[in-house]
Length: 385
Image 1 (tube, rainbow, N blue to C red):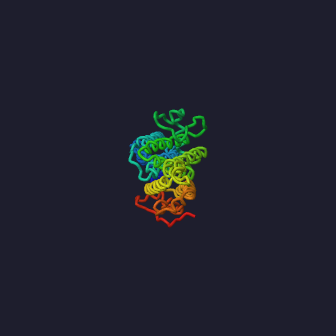
Image 2 (image 1 turned 60 degrees about the vertical axis):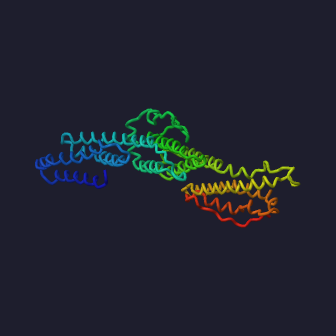
Image 3 (image 1 turned 30 degrees about the vertical axis):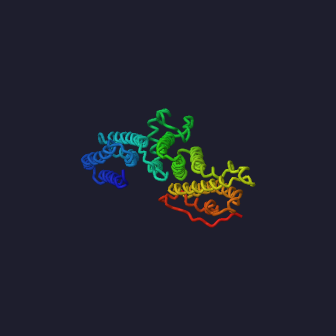
C-alpha cells in the first residue's frame, strides 16, 4: 500500500475513534455501527483485490507494502472494532491472503528467471539486462527483510523443497551447503541468485568466441558480487559466498586471457626460429620475418575485435588491461631484443617490426570500450637498441 493509502486508512480510523469521543452514548455507538463497518470493509476490499491479483514479480513490493500496513494496524483494528462483527476476522483473513500472495509472487519471480531463455547475445559481452533486473530486485527486497523472514518462516520446508531441484542445471558458481545454519530468507535469496547464475551460464553459450564467453561471465558475476557487497544483501548471504564468487569471476578473467591471447603470444616463442643451415648466426631470417608478420596480424585482429568488447566497471577494466599488458609486453620486448637486430640489417625492417612496446601498451588501453570496431592505434617509429 502506498504511503497515501496508509494515511487514508489511519485518517478513517481516527475519525471513527473521534465519533466515539464526541458523541455521547448511545449516539456514538449508533454512529459507529452505521459507518464503521462500511468504511473499514471498503478499505479492506482494496487489500483483497491486491491479494487476488495476478502474481507478476513487479507487484511483489505493493503486496508487501499492503501486508505491512495491515499487519501494523491489525492490533488497532482489533481494539476499535472489537464489538463489530466480522471486521477483525476479515482483516486477519486478508492479511493471511496477502502473505500467501507475497510468497506466490516471490515464487513467480524465481520462475520468471528460469523461464528467461532469450539467447540473443549481449553485444560485447557486457552485463545482461536480466542480471541488472534481478540484482536490483533483490536489493530492494532487503528493505522488507523482517517481513519476508516472517512470511517464509510461516511456511518452513525442508532445504531441498525450499531451494528447488532442477535437473540438468550447472551449479558452476558453487555448491549449496544444506548444513549451513542460515535464515530461510537467506537461503531463498542465495537460491534465486544461483538460478540467475545458471541462466547466465546458458546465455554465455551464445557467444562463438570462447574468450568472449569468459568475459561475459566475468562481467556478470562481478556485477552480482558488487551489488551484494555494497548493499544489505551481504548481511543475508555472507562473506564466504562473496569470496567464492570473487574467485570465480577472477578465474573467468584468467580463462579469458588464455583464450584471447594464446595465439598472439605463440608467435613470440623461440621454437622453430633457429636453423643452423640458414646462415652463420643460426637464426632463420625467413622464419623470423613470418613470425613478426604473423604476430602483427594477430595483434591487430585482437585489438580490432576486443576494442568492441565491454567491461563497464572502470576498476575491473583497468585491472584486466594491466594483466594483459603484464603478459604481452615483456614477452614482446624480450622477443624483439633477441631477434630484432637480425632484421634491422635488412631492407624495410619496419615492415616486420611494426610496433614498439609503447605502441602495444597504448593499443591495450583501447580494449573493452565497446567501440564500433574501426578503432586503430598509431605506430611510433621504433628501432632496436
